[in-house]
Amino acid sequence: MIKAAILTMSDKGAVGERSDASGPALEKWLAEHEVTTLKYKMIPDDIATIYATLKEWCDSGRFDLILTTGGTGVSPRDVTPDATEQVLDRIIPGFGEAMRMRSLEKTPNAIISRAVAGIRGKTLIINLPGSPKGAMENLEAVWPAIPHAVAKIQGDPSECATPSHISAAAVSQGKAVAFVAKSGTGKTTLLEKVITELKGRGYRVGAIKHGSHTFDIDHPDKDSYRMTAAGADTMLISSTEKLAMVKKHDVSPPIGELIAAYFGDVDIILSEGFKKSDLPKIEVHRKEWNETLLCRGGKNDPSLIAVVSDEPLELDVPVFDLNDATGIAGFIIEKFLSLPLS
Image (tube, rainbow, N blue to C red):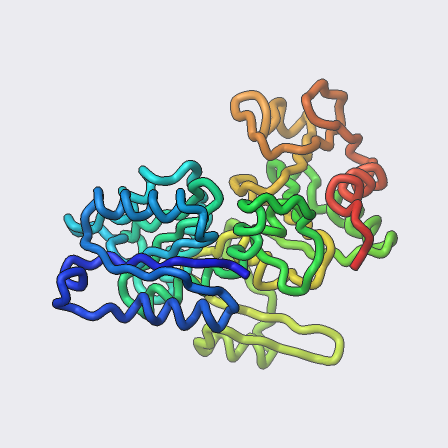
């Protein structure tokens, strides 16, 4: 069971002029998710006090998770992220990005949040907003990744293998691969062949296409199209064979959030695009389209794991022939699916 602590920042609350609603709400939420809160404290918005408290709590070895609430904005006394960054050994930027993305669904002011998260020793620290509603929404946005992150921080050597509640962090660290290339290189055709190979060997495959432009997947004469055109923010059509969803948003969600939300029932996810993500990448290369690689040369992308090319290349990663879908599928299985199927 995860052992947690909650630290609330409030100048007025620390001197008894304001009660704290966020801390108790978080403690109740954690209890409902089988997390024990061992310590709760309210302190002023003072960078030295915040730093000293976080350092003491982390170094005590008592807590797997510390949630802070308050002081994440841009007011002069909002210094929680500044103090937290001084305490951390390693920052995990994805938490802050996911929380801001969730908050942007509610308010454009979310972009001024400076909340950070990261690791000190064996403790995960996450900054949350000061309002109870904001704190809860942000925690819910990242919670699917927290148990896995805590386990890994504590030294869990197990693979990110199975379950139906698979988290964004677990998938992105081992069960998703991005095929990247310049437009026209043939990556969609290659993906079709690789998917066919993987399905033929009994694996459940998910696929994500990154679209850089607006698109429609429905037809104007269909009822579902008419409902979306009328202004429905989310429209889902379901039959005995399949379902499809159209969901409007202002900003494309992070790839990890999409994976966590929609791909918990597959063994491997193959994405087309997302070259700026941290996913493991296989670059598709054609000499006539691009003399240099996207992930090598001018930019050395550490997430590159293989290249598929129509010409011989000497690289620090495996190189497959453009027509070798069987070999590419075998490489993916060996690297990501070596555990028995669930």
